[in-house]
Image (cartoon, rainbow, N blue to C red; front, side):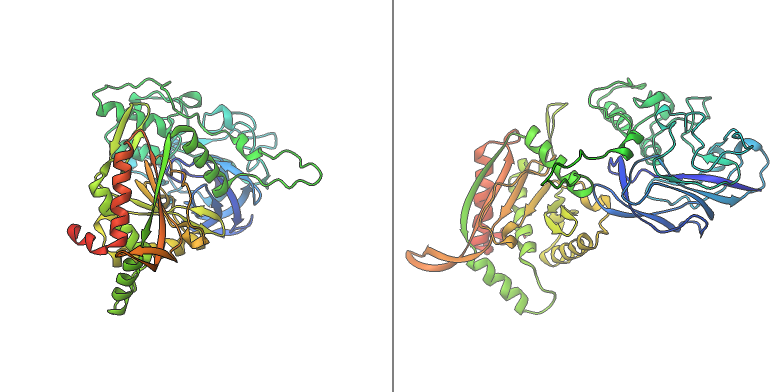
Length: 479
Protein backbone atom coordinates (compact mmCIF):
# COMPACT_ATOMS: atom_id res chain seq x y z
CA UNK A 1 0.00 0.00 0.00
CA UNK A 2 1.41 3.36 -1.03
CA UNK A 3 1.66 6.42 1.16
CA UNK A 4 0.81 9.84 -0.19
CA UNK A 5 3.34 12.36 1.12
CA UNK A 6 2.80 16.08 1.00
CA UNK A 7 5.68 18.34 -0.05
CA UNK A 8 5.40 21.97 1.02
CA UNK A 9 7.08 25.06 -0.41
CA UNK A 10 10.33 25.14 1.59
CA UNK A 11 11.98 28.16 3.15
CA UNK A 12 14.09 29.52 0.28
CA UNK A 13 16.35 31.43 2.64
CA UNK A 14 17.22 35.10 3.22
CA UNK A 15 13.89 35.91 4.88
CA UNK A 16 11.74 35.15 1.83
CA UNK A 17 8.14 34.46 2.81
CA UNK A 18 6.43 33.68 -0.51
CA UNK A 19 7.06 32.68 -4.10
CA UNK A 20 5.11 32.77 -7.35
CA UNK A 21 4.62 29.62 -9.41
CA UNK A 22 6.16 30.34 -12.81
CA UNK A 23 6.09 26.93 -14.46
CA UNK A 24 5.15 23.42 -13.42
CA UNK A 25 7.74 20.85 -14.49
CA UNK A 26 5.56 17.81 -13.75
CA UNK A 27 1.94 16.77 -14.31
CA UNK A 28 -0.40 14.80 -12.08
CA UNK A 29 0.35 11.13 -12.79
CA UNK A 30 4.03 11.71 -13.64
CA UNK A 31 6.66 9.57 -11.96
CA UNK A 32 9.31 11.67 -10.20
CA UNK A 33 12.68 10.72 -8.79
CA UNK A 34 14.19 11.95 -5.55
CA UNK A 35 15.63 15.45 -6.00
CA UNK A 36 13.94 15.94 -9.37
CA UNK A 37 12.84 19.57 -9.91
CA UNK A 38 9.05 19.72 -9.95
CA UNK A 39 8.27 23.45 -10.17
CA UNK A 40 9.97 26.72 -11.08
CA UNK A 41 9.12 29.58 -8.75
CA UNK A 42 10.02 33.26 -8.69
CA UNK A 43 10.82 34.88 -5.38
CA UNK A 44 11.51 38.51 -4.70
CA UNK A 45 15.17 37.74 -5.38
CA UNK A 46 15.56 35.03 -7.99
CA UNK A 47 14.09 32.25 -10.13
CA UNK A 48 14.46 28.90 -8.37
CA UNK A 49 13.76 25.32 -9.44
CA UNK A 50 12.40 23.44 -6.45
CA UNK A 51 13.36 19.73 -6.27
CA UNK A 52 11.11 17.21 -4.53
CA UNK A 53 12.62 15.12 -1.70
CA UNK A 54 10.37 12.13 -2.50
CA UNK A 55 10.30 9.61 -5.33
CA UNK A 56 6.99 8.30 -6.59
CA UNK A 57 3.87 9.28 -8.53
CA UNK A 58 2.53 12.84 -8.42
CA UNK A 59 -1.07 12.68 -7.16
CA UNK A 60 -1.82 16.40 -6.85
CA UNK A 61 -0.45 19.86 -7.62
CA UNK A 62 -1.42 22.96 -5.67
CA UNK A 63 -1.71 26.30 -7.43
CA UNK A 64 -1.89 27.36 -11.05
CA UNK A 65 0.99 29.11 -12.80
CA UNK A 66 0.96 32.73 -11.65
CA UNK A 67 -0.32 31.84 -8.17
CA UNK A 68 1.63 33.24 -5.22
CA UNK A 69 2.11 30.81 -2.34
CA UNK A 70 3.52 31.42 1.15
CA UNK A 71 6.38 29.35 2.53
CA UNK A 72 4.91 26.23 4.10
CA UNK A 73 1.97 25.95 1.71
CA UNK A 74 1.53 22.56 -0.03
CA UNK A 75 3.14 22.22 -3.47
CA UNK A 76 2.48 18.62 -4.49
CA UNK A 77 1.59 15.24 -3.05
CA UNK A 78 3.52 12.14 -4.08
CA UNK A 79 2.48 8.50 -3.71
CA UNK A 80 5.51 6.49 -2.61
CA UNK A 81 6.03 2.84 -1.70
CA UNK A 82 5.62 2.10 1.97
CA UNK A 83 8.87 1.29 3.79
CA UNK A 84 9.03 -1.42 6.46
CA UNK A 85 9.47 0.01 9.91
CA UNK A 86 9.67 -1.26 13.46
CA UNK A 87 7.25 1.24 14.89
CA UNK A 88 4.11 2.87 13.57
CA UNK A 89 4.90 6.25 15.04
CA UNK A 90 7.88 6.86 12.80
CA UNK A 91 6.67 5.28 9.55
CA UNK A 92 7.71 7.36 6.56
CA UNK A 93 9.75 7.71 3.46
CA UNK A 94 13.36 8.77 3.53
CA UNK A 95 14.23 11.51 1.09
CA UNK A 96 17.38 13.09 -0.15
CA UNK A 97 17.73 15.63 2.62
CA UNK A 98 18.86 18.20 0.03
CA UNK A 99 15.75 20.02 -1.15
CA UNK A 100 17.32 23.44 -0.73
CA UNK A 101 19.87 25.01 1.57
CA UNK A 102 18.80 24.18 5.10
CA UNK A 103 15.95 21.93 3.97
CA UNK A 104 15.90 18.19 4.18
CA UNK A 105 13.76 15.15 4.75
CA UNK A 106 16.19 12.93 6.63
CA UNK A 107 17.90 13.41 9.94
CA UNK A 108 19.75 11.19 12.39
CA UNK A 109 17.68 8.18 13.48
CA UNK A 110 17.12 9.63 16.94
CA UNK A 111 15.60 12.76 15.44
CA UNK A 112 13.56 11.39 12.57
CA UNK A 113 10.62 13.49 11.55
CA UNK A 114 7.26 12.47 12.94
CA UNK A 115 4.51 11.13 10.73
CA UNK A 116 0.92 12.24 11.20
CA UNK A 117 -1.80 10.11 9.59
CA UNK A 118 -4.81 12.12 8.46
CA UNK A 119 -8.25 10.91 9.57
CA UNK A 120 -10.19 9.16 6.81
CA UNK A 121 -12.77 11.25 5.01
CA UNK A 122 -16.36 10.25 4.30
CA UNK A 123 -15.24 7.85 1.60
CA UNK A 124 -12.81 6.07 3.91
CA UNK A 125 -9.74 8.07 2.82
CA UNK A 126 -8.65 11.69 2.58
CA UNK A 127 -8.66 13.37 -0.83
CA UNK A 128 -5.22 14.62 -1.90
CA UNK A 129 -4.94 18.34 -1.32
CA UNK A 130 -7.83 18.38 1.21
CA UNK A 131 -6.07 16.95 4.23
CA UNK A 132 -6.61 20.17 6.15
CA UNK A 133 -10.35 20.41 5.49
CA UNK A 134 -11.35 18.88 8.80
CA UNK A 135 -8.68 20.39 10.99
CA UNK A 136 -5.55 22.59 11.10
CA UNK A 137 -2.62 21.58 8.96
CA UNK A 138 0.68 21.23 10.83
CA UNK A 139 -1.04 22.41 13.98
CA UNK A 140 -1.53 25.89 12.50
CA UNK A 141 -4.92 27.49 12.34
CA UNK A 142 -3.97 29.69 9.42
CA UNK A 143 -3.40 26.65 7.21
CA UNK A 144 -6.78 25.03 7.76
CA UNK A 145 -8.34 26.11 4.47
CA UNK A 146 -7.54 24.09 1.34
CA UNK A 147 -4.97 25.78 -0.90
CA UNK A 148 -6.12 27.94 -3.78
CA UNK A 149 -6.23 26.23 -7.16
CA UNK A 150 -5.44 22.72 -5.88
CA UNK A 151 -5.59 20.02 -8.52
CA UNK A 152 -6.61 16.77 -6.83
CA UNK A 153 -7.42 13.22 -7.57
CA UNK A 154 -8.37 10.28 -5.42
CA UNK A 155 -5.54 8.38 -3.84
CA UNK A 156 -4.42 6.56 -0.74
CA UNK A 157 -4.26 7.99 2.76
CA UNK A 158 -2.44 11.31 2.88
CA UNK A 159 0.48 11.28 5.29
CA UNK A 160 2.20 14.50 6.25
CA UNK A 161 5.89 14.15 7.04
CA UNK A 162 6.82 17.30 8.89
CA UNK A 163 9.28 17.73 11.71
CA UNK A 164 7.59 21.01 12.62
CA UNK A 165 4.11 19.65 13.26
CA UNK A 166 2.33 20.03 16.57
CA UNK A 167 3.05 22.01 19.69
CA UNK A 168 5.78 21.59 22.30
CA UNK A 169 5.95 18.07 23.58
CA UNK A 170 8.42 16.06 25.61
CA UNK A 171 12.02 17.15 25.80
CA UNK A 172 12.88 14.92 22.87
CA UNK A 173 9.69 15.65 20.90
CA UNK A 174 9.15 17.92 17.90
CA UNK A 175 9.28 21.71 18.25
CA UNK A 176 7.00 23.86 16.04
CA UNK A 177 9.38 25.68 13.67
CA UNK A 178 8.39 27.52 10.47
CA UNK A 179 11.12 25.89 8.38
CA UNK A 180 14.08 23.51 8.50
CA UNK A 181 16.36 26.47 7.74
CA UNK A 182 15.37 28.01 11.08
CA UNK A 183 16.05 24.72 12.86
CA UNK A 184 19.47 24.54 11.19
CA UNK A 185 20.28 28.14 12.17
CA UNK A 186 19.53 27.34 15.80
CA UNK A 187 21.54 24.11 15.71
CA UNK A 188 24.60 25.79 14.17
CA UNK A 189 24.58 28.41 16.93
CA UNK A 190 23.95 26.00 19.79
CA UNK A 191 20.48 27.38 20.54
CA UNK A 192 17.95 25.04 22.17
CA UNK A 193 14.62 25.64 20.42
CA UNK A 194 12.74 24.15 23.38
CA UNK A 195 13.73 27.22 25.39
CA UNK A 196 12.03 29.61 22.94
CA UNK A 197 8.42 30.65 22.72
CA UNK A 198 7.54 31.42 19.12
CA UNK A 199 5.77 34.60 18.07
CA UNK A 200 3.95 32.94 15.16
CA UNK A 201 0.50 31.36 15.22
CA UNK A 202 0.11 28.71 17.94
CA UNK A 203 3.62 29.44 19.19
CA UNK A 204 5.29 28.71 15.85
CA UNK A 205 8.98 29.64 16.05
CA UNK A 206 9.96 32.05 13.28
CA UNK A 207 13.40 32.91 11.93
CA UNK A 208 13.09 36.31 13.60
CA UNK A 209 12.62 34.58 16.99
CA UNK A 210 15.86 32.66 16.57
CA UNK A 211 17.80 35.70 15.35
CA UNK A 212 16.45 37.78 18.24
CA UNK A 213 17.47 35.08 20.71
CA UNK A 214 20.97 34.92 19.23
CA UNK A 215 21.34 38.70 19.45
CA UNK A 216 20.10 38.63 23.02
CA UNK A 217 22.56 35.85 23.89
CA UNK A 218 25.36 37.94 22.45
CA UNK A 219 24.37 40.81 24.74
CA UNK A 220 24.36 38.62 27.85
CA UNK A 221 20.66 37.82 27.94
CA UNK A 222 19.50 34.38 29.01
CA UNK A 223 16.83 32.13 27.54
CA UNK A 224 13.94 31.77 27.40
CA UNK A 225 13.37 34.77 25.17
CA UNK A 226 10.04 36.57 25.32
CA UNK A 227 7.81 35.69 22.41
CA UNK A 228 6.43 39.14 21.66
CA UNK A 229 9.50 41.24 21.00
CA UNK A 230 9.51 44.43 18.92
CA UNK A 231 9.82 44.18 15.19
CA UNK A 232 9.11 40.46 14.80
CA UNK A 233 7.08 39.81 11.64
CA UNK A 234 4.13 37.46 11.89
CA UNK A 235 4.03 34.21 9.97
CA UNK A 236 2.89 34.49 6.37
CA UNK A 237 -0.72 33.64 5.72
CA UNK A 238 -2.04 31.51 2.86
CA UNK A 239 -4.25 34.50 2.09
CA UNK A 240 -1.24 35.79 0.15
CA UNK A 241 -2.13 33.32 -2.55
CA UNK A 242 -5.49 34.94 -3.15
CA UNK A 243 -4.39 38.55 -3.40
CA UNK A 244 -5.76 40.28 -6.45
CA UNK A 245 -5.57 43.78 -7.86
CA UNK A 246 -8.46 46.20 -7.99
CA UNK A 247 -10.48 46.26 -11.22
CA UNK A 248 -9.05 48.60 -13.83
CA UNK A 249 -11.14 51.60 -14.85
CA UNK A 250 -11.62 52.38 -18.54
CA UNK A 251 -8.34 53.55 -20.04
CA UNK A 252 -6.27 52.06 -17.18
CA UNK A 253 -3.81 49.21 -17.17
CA UNK A 254 -2.90 47.77 -13.79
CA UNK A 255 0.30 45.77 -13.27
CA UNK A 256 0.73 43.95 -9.93
CA UNK A 257 3.78 44.93 -7.93
CA UNK A 258 5.08 41.45 -7.23
CA UNK A 259 8.17 39.37 -7.72
CA UNK A 260 11.33 41.37 -8.35
CA UNK A 261 9.40 44.52 -9.24
CA UNK A 262 7.49 44.35 -5.97
CA UNK A 263 10.64 43.67 -3.97
CA UNK A 264 12.39 46.66 -5.56
CA UNK A 265 9.39 48.88 -4.81
CA UNK A 266 9.29 47.79 -1.18
CA UNK A 267 13.02 48.24 -0.69
CA UNK A 268 13.17 51.69 -2.28
CA UNK A 269 10.16 52.87 -0.29
CA UNK A 270 11.72 51.57 2.92
CA UNK A 271 15.00 53.29 2.13
CA UNK A 272 13.30 56.63 1.58
CA UNK A 273 11.17 56.15 4.70
CA UNK A 274 13.91 55.12 7.11
CA UNK A 275 17.20 56.61 5.90
CA UNK A 276 17.96 60.35 6.18
CA UNK A 277 20.02 60.46 3.01
CA UNK A 278 22.06 63.24 1.45
CA UNK A 279 23.80 63.44 -1.92
CA UNK A 280 27.00 65.11 -3.06
CA UNK A 281 28.58 65.00 -6.50
CA UNK A 282 31.65 66.03 -8.43
CA UNK A 283 32.81 66.06 -12.07
CA UNK A 284 36.06 64.21 -12.73
CA UNK A 285 38.43 63.95 -15.69
CA UNK A 286 38.49 60.23 -16.52
CA UNK A 287 40.88 60.53 -19.45
CA UNK A 288 43.82 58.95 -17.62
CA UNK A 289 41.67 56.14 -16.24
CA UNK A 290 40.50 55.27 -19.76
CA UNK A 291 44.12 55.32 -20.97
CA UNK A 292 45.22 53.08 -18.10
CA UNK A 293 42.48 50.56 -18.93
CA UNK A 294 43.45 50.58 -22.62
CA UNK A 295 47.09 49.91 -21.67
CA UNK A 296 46.09 47.01 -19.40
CA UNK A 297 44.03 45.40 -22.12
CA UNK A 298 46.74 45.93 -24.73
CA UNK A 299 49.23 44.05 -22.56
CA UNK A 300 47.45 40.73 -23.12
CA UNK A 301 45.52 38.45 -20.82
CA UNK A 302 41.85 38.74 -19.81
CA UNK A 303 40.27 42.10 -20.58
CA UNK A 304 39.67 44.41 -17.63
CA UNK A 305 36.27 46.08 -17.42
CA UNK A 306 35.76 49.70 -16.49
CA UNK A 307 33.35 48.58 -13.75
CA UNK A 308 36.11 46.48 -12.21
CA UNK A 309 38.45 49.49 -12.06
CA UNK A 310 35.72 51.60 -10.47
CA UNK A 311 35.08 48.81 -7.97
CA UNK A 312 38.79 48.67 -7.12
CA UNK A 313 38.70 52.43 -6.53
CA UNK A 314 35.63 52.04 -4.30
CA UNK A 315 37.21 49.41 -2.09
CA UNK A 316 40.34 51.54 -1.69
CA UNK A 317 38.17 54.53 -0.75
CA UNK A 318 36.19 52.48 1.76
CA UNK A 319 39.43 51.42 3.42
CA UNK A 320 40.16 55.11 4.00
CA UNK A 321 36.60 56.03 4.95
CA UNK A 322 35.14 52.90 6.64
CA UNK A 323 32.20 54.84 8.06
CA UNK A 324 30.47 54.39 4.71
CA UNK A 325 30.91 50.60 4.77
CA UNK A 326 28.34 50.13 7.51
CA UNK A 327 24.69 49.89 8.46
CA UNK A 328 22.50 51.35 11.19
CA UNK A 329 20.87 49.09 13.78
CA UNK A 330 17.94 51.37 14.54
CA UNK A 331 16.61 49.19 17.34
CA UNK A 332 19.93 49.18 19.19
CA UNK A 333 20.74 52.75 18.08
CA UNK A 334 24.16 51.62 16.90
CA UNK A 335 26.23 51.97 13.74
CA UNK A 336 27.56 48.57 12.68
CA UNK A 337 30.81 48.84 10.71
CA UNK A 338 32.06 45.96 8.54
CA UNK A 339 35.66 44.83 8.07
CA UNK A 340 34.85 43.35 4.66
CA UNK A 341 33.38 44.84 1.50
CA UNK A 342 30.59 42.87 -0.15
CA UNK A 343 30.08 45.09 -3.17
CA UNK A 344 26.67 45.23 -4.80
CA UNK A 345 26.24 46.54 -8.33
CA UNK A 346 23.03 47.53 -10.05
CA UNK A 347 22.18 45.45 -13.12
CA UNK A 348 19.18 45.97 -15.39
CA UNK A 349 17.64 42.73 -16.69
CA UNK A 350 14.51 41.74 -18.59
CA UNK A 351 13.00 40.79 -15.22
CA UNK A 352 13.79 44.16 -13.67
CA UNK A 353 16.53 45.74 -11.59
CA UNK A 354 18.69 43.36 -9.58
CA UNK A 355 21.70 44.05 -7.37
CA UNK A 356 24.09 41.07 -7.35
CA UNK A 357 26.79 41.09 -4.69
CA UNK A 358 30.50 40.46 -5.19
CA UNK A 359 31.72 38.85 -1.97
CA UNK A 360 34.97 40.11 -0.45
CA UNK A 361 35.52 42.62 -3.23
CA UNK A 362 38.25 44.27 -1.15
CA UNK A 363 40.38 41.12 -1.52
CA UNK A 364 40.04 40.88 -5.32
CA UNK A 365 42.20 42.38 -8.04
CA UNK A 366 40.83 43.96 -11.22
CA UNK A 367 40.99 40.68 -13.15
CA UNK A 368 39.05 38.78 -10.50
CA UNK A 369 36.50 41.57 -10.20
CA UNK A 370 35.99 41.58 -13.98
CA UNK A 371 35.32 37.84 -14.03
CA UNK A 372 32.90 37.98 -11.10
CA UNK A 373 30.98 40.92 -12.54
CA UNK A 374 30.62 39.03 -15.81
CA UNK A 375 29.45 35.84 -14.10
CA UNK A 376 26.86 37.57 -11.92
CA UNK A 377 25.61 39.76 -14.78
CA UNK A 378 25.02 36.70 -16.96
CA UNK A 379 23.25 34.93 -14.12
CA UNK A 380 21.06 38.00 -13.68
CA UNK A 381 20.12 38.00 -17.35
CA UNK A 382 19.19 34.33 -17.29
CA UNK A 383 17.34 34.56 -13.97
CA UNK A 384 19.63 32.08 -12.23
CA UNK A 385 20.97 34.29 -9.44
CA UNK A 386 20.55 32.65 -6.06
CA UNK A 387 19.13 34.51 -3.04
CA UNK A 388 22.60 34.42 -1.49
CA UNK A 389 24.06 36.22 -4.52
CA UNK A 390 21.50 39.01 -4.17
CA UNK A 391 21.83 39.78 -0.47
CA UNK A 392 24.44 40.72 2.10
CA UNK A 393 25.93 43.75 0.35
CA UNK A 394 27.68 46.42 2.41
CA UNK A 395 28.08 49.08 -0.32
CA UNK A 396 26.62 49.48 -3.82
CA UNK A 397 28.14 50.77 -7.06
CA UNK A 398 25.59 52.00 -9.60
CA UNK A 399 26.84 52.64 -13.14
CA UNK A 400 23.79 54.37 -14.63
CA UNK A 401 26.02 55.90 -17.31
CA UNK A 402 25.17 52.87 -19.46
CA UNK A 403 21.72 54.44 -19.91
CA UNK A 404 23.27 57.53 -21.46
CA UNK A 405 22.67 59.86 -18.50
CA UNK A 406 25.16 62.14 -16.79
CA UNK A 407 23.95 62.20 -13.21
CA UNK A 408 21.44 60.99 -10.67
CA UNK A 409 20.64 61.02 -6.96
CA UNK A 410 20.81 57.30 -6.14
CA UNK A 411 18.51 55.76 -3.53
CA UNK A 412 20.50 53.82 -0.96
CA UNK A 413 20.17 50.05 -1.12
CA UNK A 414 18.68 49.47 2.34
CA UNK A 415 20.12 48.55 4.84
CA UNK A 416 23.44 49.79 3.49
CA UNK A 417 24.76 53.26 4.30
CA UNK A 418 25.90 54.58 0.91
CA UNK A 419 25.86 54.18 -2.85
CA UNK A 420 28.22 55.56 -5.48
CA UNK A 421 26.62 56.52 -8.79
CA UNK A 422 28.64 56.84 -12.01
CA UNK A 423 27.36 58.73 -15.04
CA UNK A 424 28.39 58.37 -18.67
CA UNK A 425 31.95 59.26 -19.67
CA UNK A 426 31.79 61.75 -22.54
CA UNK A 427 34.12 64.28 -24.23
CA UNK A 428 33.70 67.74 -22.71
CA UNK A 429 35.64 71.00 -22.56
CA UNK A 430 37.95 70.87 -19.54
CA UNK A 431 40.80 72.98 -18.19
CA UNK A 432 43.80 70.65 -18.21
CA UNK A 433 47.23 71.90 -17.08
CA UNK A 434 46.08 75.49 -17.44
CA UNK A 435 44.70 75.13 -20.94
CA UNK A 436 41.27 74.40 -22.37
CA UNK A 437 41.12 70.90 -23.81
CA UNK A 438 38.64 68.19 -24.71
CA UNK A 439 38.74 65.52 -22.00
CA UNK A 440 36.72 62.42 -21.03
CA UNK A 441 34.55 63.69 -18.16
CA UNK A 442 32.32 61.76 -15.76
CA UNK A 443 30.00 62.87 -12.98
CA UNK A 444 30.25 60.93 -9.71
CA UNK A 445 27.42 61.03 -7.14
CA UNK A 446 27.50 59.74 -3.58
CA UNK A 447 24.29 59.26 -1.61
CA UNK A 448 24.96 58.48 2.03
CA UNK A 449 23.13 57.90 5.29
CA UNK A 450 23.67 61.06 7.32
CA UNK A 451 23.41 59.04 10.54
CA UNK A 452 26.71 57.24 9.90
CA UNK A 453 28.79 60.29 9.03
CA UNK A 454 28.74 64.00 8.26
CA UNK A 455 29.55 65.81 5.05
CA UNK A 456 33.27 65.88 5.74
CA UNK A 457 33.60 62.09 5.55
CA UNK A 458 31.29 61.84 2.54
CA UNK A 459 33.13 64.61 0.74
CA UNK A 460 36.48 63.05 1.56
CA UNK A 461 35.38 59.69 0.17
CA UNK A 462 34.04 61.22 -3.04
CA UNK A 463 37.10 63.40 -3.53
CA UNK A 464 39.41 60.38 -3.11
CA UNK A 465 37.38 58.45 -5.70
CA UNK A 466 37.61 61.41 -8.10
CA UNK A 467 41.37 61.69 -7.52
CA UNK A 468 41.82 58.00 -8.38
CA UNK A 469 39.72 58.42 -11.52
CA UNK A 470 41.80 61.41 -12.58
CA UNK A 471 45.16 59.93 -11.53
CA UNK A 472 45.00 56.11 -11.35
CA UNK A 473 48.54 56.06 -9.97
CA UNK A 474 47.03 57.20 -6.65
CA UNK A 475 45.82 53.60 -6.26
CA UNK A 476 49.42 52.34 -6.15
CA UNK A 477 49.58 53.44 -2.52
CA UNK A 478 47.00 50.80 -1.56
CA UNK A 479 48.10 47.90 -3.80
